[in-house]
Image 1 (cartoon, rainbow, N blue to C red):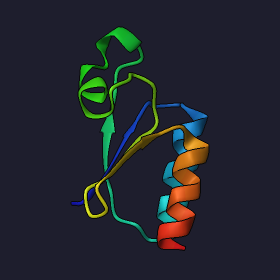
Image 2: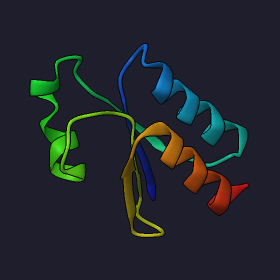
Image 3: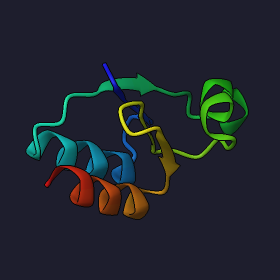
Length: 79
């Protein structure tokens, strides 16, 4: 799969991104992260920071954080 969404259960920003990806029919893998920032090593390795959501779009060579930025990118790329 060329899309990966790093997200946290119960995170409204993550849910907003996941819902929009679903609405647009974009297939993605979910990686559920730990609630504690200090345990989000995989997110840090991928994006350089520990906040979620983080979208990795291998097809376009993009890794980005912050739900509003991700949604803008998704709209431009897939809507």
